[in-house]
Image (cartoon, rainbow, N blue to C red; front, side, top):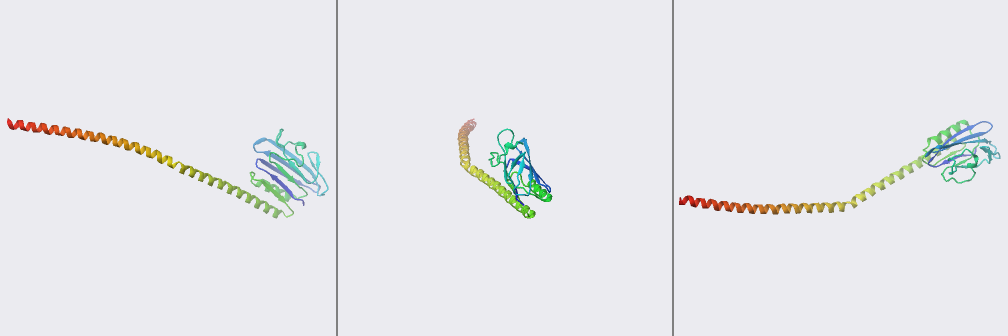
Length: 228
């Protein structure tokens, strides 16, 4: 069995439907740009005989068994149904690329392959490999997908840690400014207290003068009383 491979990138959702019969194997590939819901297309591939010398038909155009499908970024929409938009070997500026090698597969293998493609995270680059040993292929796909997902999570955690450290550095950098502001506030408060203390001292002196005057007046009255 010739390996069957699908490779796609973030922003593009692939829905793959495969069917097999005794005569040939056909595939329908629908691609949708998640940012542009109105751009969807379907590609019908037929004539996939097990004979290596046979050719395949893509939208009424004949190709060799090994072929490359790539999207076009120019309008009309992302995945035009016309075969002129799917030129073999062309580069895709929209990061959408399929490399397919198809041969006869049992319906059960096709069903498992379809489930694997739809189950993997759509925001990660996914490569699905099918060999004669379906269980081995499925395990390889799951392991690769899990490893890529873990690397993705580790990158996010590293970015969050870096952001926290940046915030801590910014907080430490603002400390001297806060201390200087607090020092100015304390200086102003100290000046206010000194001014209040000065006013209190003046008031105390005034009260002492008043007390002396009262003492003199009381003494004068006592002298007058003694004379009388």
